Image 1 (spheres, helix red, strand yellow):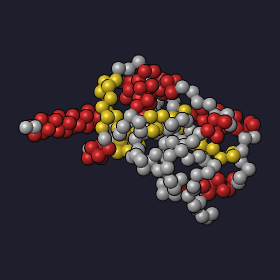
Image 2 (cartoon, helix red, strand yellow; image 1 turned 90 degrees about the horizontal axis):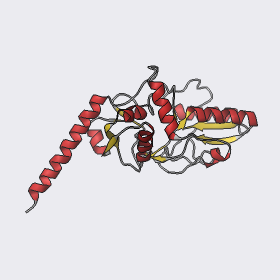
Image 3 (cartoon, one colour; image 1 turned 180 degrees about the vertical axis):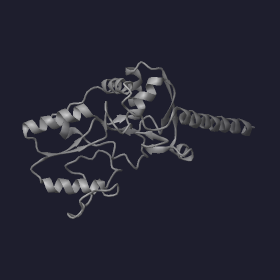
Image 4 (cartoon, one colour; image 1 turned 60 degrees about the horizontal axis):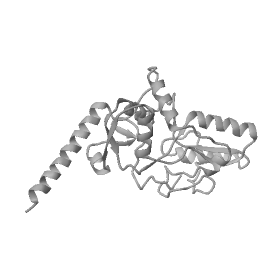
Length: 239
């Protein structure tokens, strides 16, 4: 999508990238979205087109969502990026798969966003921690400081998964799923996804992306030092 900023977009009306040229056989990171549009054009309008969101749950090879159930299961002070009200959006792989099978069996056509509801980041953390029986405290750290500490967005080494800059990516995490829900998509409770993801990780077959425990502690220590220094400066400036 060319517009990741505007909230509440839906698949059947959102603006699209220009498709890649017909002679392009393999996409790259730069042409990934445009290549998907080219595939949609090749399929035609009389088809079921599912634009899946971030796919999570057991057997997720990316480790992006898995970071959070794993981290919250450990408990303690948790580095939380941005603000509690920042939006996040994803879908359990089992819900997506069941819906795609349902669509095939029932001859469903149309263009849909195959993802779950938008949640506030704070709500995500609270629900997951509660489901896992963890005692957590959350230290919310703003974007400028995280960038100063070379903490990266979304995925990869030294990243905070599911964290994207706001408002630049508000449209990416607030897709309107009403059409998909009306067409049979059902979403299981987040608590189930969180528990099942942790159970899967404990088998030793999964991976977790993002900050290591040591990196998280270092960033938290730096944040507390900054906050305490700021408080000391303000106290010293009082008449």
